[in-house]
Image (cartoon, rainbow, N blue to C red; front, side, top):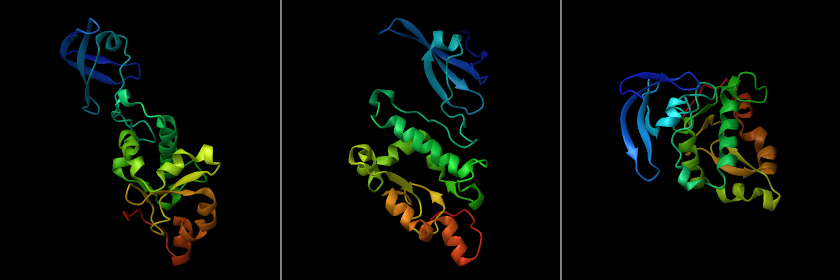
Length: 195
């Protein structure tokens, strides 16, 4: 690969090669690539870059909002897939206009920090009842990520507003604490706000 030349990955994203180095442990060349759309950089194997098998972890691929970020693969978490699915579902509920059960019509948002999957995964263990969410299959009780149980009427998913609550409590308290229920009670449509 030629330094300074623009290439495309398999998704059609343009990147430029900034530097090269030999990875002695595996006797392969690595190249530092910079993705033009996001400005993100990363070292990748040259053979993968030649084949277009390099991904821009900062490309907003989920509803034009969510992106992967850099997750340390050496610390592969046992709950990675479960957390990724939860993150995708939260984004869907907030930003997918076709999701009839979602909160899009109520202006519900995800805080900018959680647009990034890596940040979301980093923050999850700090949320109240995280341990119960992790063990829900063994315990036979489902736990949901809730944004407005702690702060009624809150319509922002964030590390400061969210917690895990059991599904029974979530459904029984739902009419009192959901954005829709709260704003029906106070008589106005919500405007996204940071709680």
